[in-house]
Image (tube, rainbow, N blue to C red; front, top):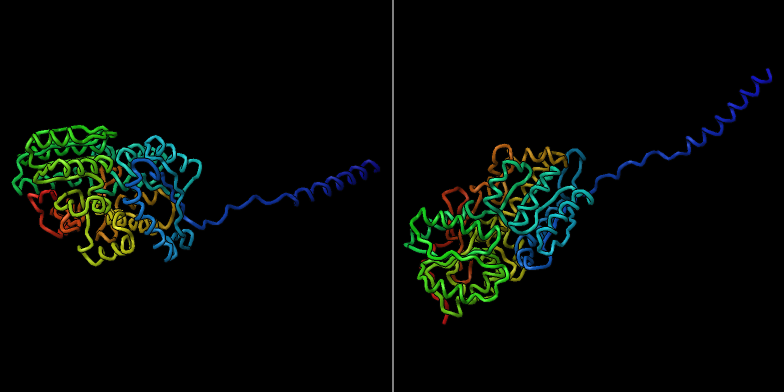
Length: 420
């Protein structure tokens, strides 16, 4: 009996000791309530591509996010509330390798909710497989490539928003030149993915319309003296001069052409010629210079409103005549897709991207997809393809036969000569 009592007392003592320990253990921590949508970006905040950040997508997201947040943010039905959008941005220093490393860091270490792209064709080409690997939707902004278009079959999470060489700029440019009577062209291009692609597409499109290419010259990214190239173009007697390159090349190419009095009948430039800083730098001398374009504030009340939001109080040199409307429409599409999905689950949102139609500043906005892969913002949403400086205004002078095209001026050919 004594043994039984002793065992019982011992058991009670053990229970008394254990129960406080059990009750004292804290409950497993609950995840904090979701209170924002974090978008990660690797952007060129320094280095040679800084001008593209400052005048390209930079002003768009910096205006679009406050505009959306002022209305409460993005509504997520699963959470039953709107969430404000915040950004986590790293400087890729205009270096493709750095952009790739930072993109992976944002996804795997920072665990951001979404990724938006960096700012050049080469960087998009490198970023796309990383985003796709982790099933992160990658809306792209500055940059685009035919090679990326061909890859979209295997990149279901990548959606390209800027018009580019054969989607559908150079074909329209070739048709415009042929109609105007051009017979020959001299092509220069930066020795990277962007330049090589544009030069290649120009070669085939010019051949299609009977324009002979008299020169095809690769430009090293660090080329300092453009005089030999411009003198060779002058000697060729070509009707059209093309410089498929970035601001570091198109600015000295233009300045050297003015200095040497090189006056071809048409003069088209890559990214930079369609930005406000180009007009700020050269003033009235830009009259008749062409570049790629998608919009103009005169096209509609919506475009005028967009201009006022982005540039109404901004200096002229940050104005972007190429992608501002496409970028704004693409961000609205991103928001609408999340709200229709009712979740932040990117696999669900991706299906809406691939099949959805939303009304944005571009009108009916949707993507042309490739197989079961990613997509390109449909060319039917483009407001225009080619622009030209006329009387200090960057007019839309070329576009396709699709519904959104709204030309604001006739193409001037031949262009006026440079001021003496």
